[in-house]
Length: 371
Image (cartoon, rainbow, N blue to C red; front, side):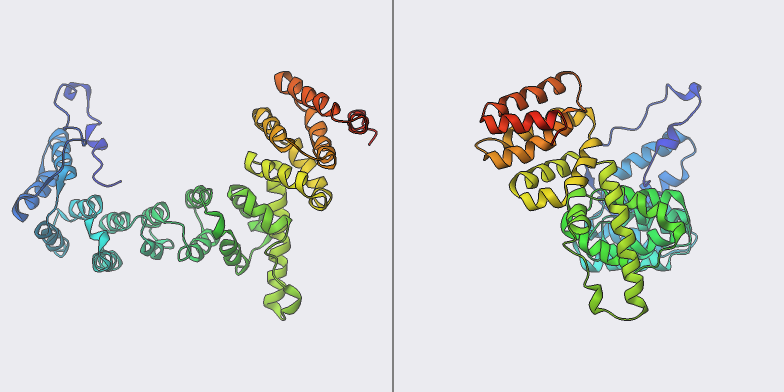
């Protein structure tokens, strides 16, 4: 958003022959004096033609403020009514050497909290992008400010609880879309903490659709481990009171939504995990046989070649018992594969049949749906 000169270039065709600003890839230079910086800021605000304004904005992009220049920016921000305040706030967010100093972050945060001009406050919040402190503005009543905070929010232990509260309170579809997009990049170790914060909120029936969309976005391997294998299931039996009942309802709701999301759109990473674990562990294969069949039925044609390569890797020097378990899955998958992938699946099964007469008979029975 900041120092964006695109709107200045949307001019009539008659102005098309006027020169555009120099590319931003040119070498950055330091402002020689605060007066130079203040002068360029004034040009960005006061120039009459869009092309002249755009050139001034491009200069600001290439002008790295010195410590004295930063103080000149702060002096402008301290003057209510100064027409350069928005450009100054934008420049502060474009060149962010102050991020390396806790005092610099506190100074920008303090200015953002007390700022009275919405456009300037939006620019200051944008300047805090990827800093944990931006979480403070997620529930701001001004939609533009809340949007900048959502876009700039980093995912971490300190920001998950504010994110969940903002998602719970999201009144605008755009904000919800931003949060869901961010959660696709959630680090697996943070999954338990995210679910813990979700457990603490009250969710009504009207929220189920939004929660379903949330679980679709989450990394699938830790989601499977948490809800299908129940590695992180809370010990609800030892808890008492209404809070425990609410947490129990949430857990059952989340488990249902997570399992549905995993079965309907499994990723290749999840399918590889399921195949590997099923080949290694007969107990796992039995417990999750139904889940795995449903997940494999949703595997699209694009996944076929990669899954077949994974089957080949898993059967290298494998025992007969392991081959039987994998053959059950490969036969199920082969019924859905067509073209070259279907031929490859059949060839792989024929290769396994050569391992022993007993294995050949078992695979034949599976193919005839007798087992």
